[in-house]
Image (cartoon, rainbow, N blue to C red; front, side):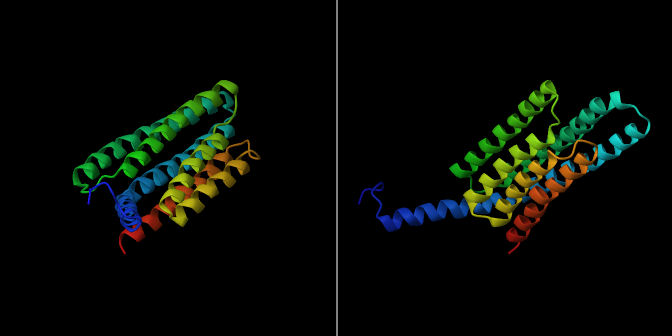
Length: 199
């Protein structure tokens, strides 16, 4: 029999094998969700403190630049840690599937969308969190649906809900709301992924 002529049962087994390999690799990436979850949660709390201090001193003109600088600093730290972690992970990884490549592309495009979205928000004078949470929700929900991991789907949906809630908050408390969204969307699913890995 020709190698490329599979029976329906063989085709199904092959697909299941690829999905299983992908799930194994994706569980290894729980650390990435936890990394970004903790860094961005800390960034939100730090941003809240900065805005509270500036508001108390009535330094309103500094709120935008300091807030942007705060997020930029935490993002830079996150990207450095992620680069180091991914290099190590890719050296140790035994199985790399097309599904892994798909998810890498998904999150690369998502990262680019965050930067473009932030630029658009600044140009239009819109506060970024509702848009950023919406983008995070899209990528997280797609990831969860694709690997059939319910906590990640729920985390993605929570981003949508927090995105809508953020439209009702226009002061420094939006930073705390953003931190709560990241905890629900990245940290909790990240720990579920880590726990699933240890089973």
